Amino acid sequence: MAIGLKQGREVNRNMNEPTSEERMRVLHALAEGGFVAPGAEADALLRASSEGVGPIEELIAHRLHGKPLAWITGSMRFCGVRVSVDPGVFVPRPHTQALARRAVSLLPDVGIAVDLCTGSGAVAVVLGSAHPAATVVATDVDPVAVACARRNGVSAFVGNLDEPLSPSLRGRVDVMTAVVPYVPTEELHLLPRDALANEPRRALDGGRRGTTVLVRAAEAAARWLRPGGSALLELGGDQAGEVATTLADVGLSEIRVHRDGDGQDRAIEARRPGSPLWGDGRR
Ligand SMILES: C[S@@+](CC[C@H](N)C(=O)[O-])C[C@H]1O[C@@H](n2cnc3c(N)ncnc32)[C@H](O)[C@@H]1O
Image (cartoon, rainbow, N blue to C red):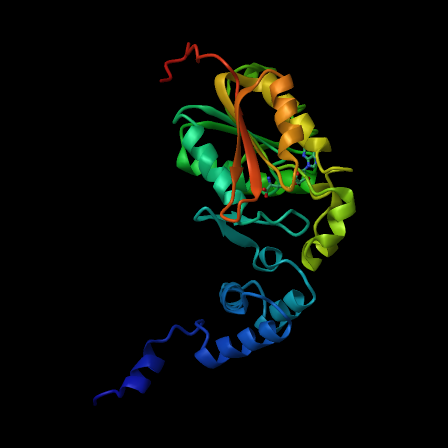
């Protein structure tokens, strides 16, 4: 007996796959809740539900109450790599992918990278997946973040900035990345409602001008980079001038600011002067 097209689709449909009506229902609930990308969010919630994270109604309710999407689904894609993001851990921002890609391009295949303030470990995960033979080490002051980064396969340590790093890495690091908290305290209220209500304040608050931890990260870079090694620090607003001054003061050079498509300062890069003196067979 010939099966009609509609009937055939029904037969072939995966039992866990949402129907288009179900998708529209979730999408409408999110659109009415004011979400700007309801289609993408609906798909992520439906996928998570079909993977057993929880009943879809429960996941929608969490989202409508402002819980970050990645905490509900348990993961997100960052530079094309799936990264687990545990509840309580800063959700990596899409614009940070540009910094991660730049870091990938600066890291030699068997090089050494350090990611300070790693959070979920997203930047470190991308570095490790692009350079599987490289050594990638990360730190974060928050034990919940470090546990999450380790679950993502990152060699992560709890502690303040560079304090947990092994002294054996001093002067040998090819790339040091840091996405530190850099929102000025007085501008915290301008953050999206979800971020402010849920993410830990120490992941966001960068002090009076937002540069308190940034400046310390710039100083740390000078202690660990090898000659020719690079620092990449994310920043925002008008912070580039102060951070550039610190980078120059600690002896780094070739300082350049990276801007996004809207012309906003997004990161600063600097190099430790000198050429690498490989003693370990690296090119
Ligand atoms: C803005 S989040 C960035 C996380 C991650 N790099 C990312 O892009 O998703 C900043 C992170 O820095 C951590 N942090 C804040 N102060 C720190 C410090 N003094 N030393 C190490 N980590 C710190 C926070 O716990 C948080 O995970």
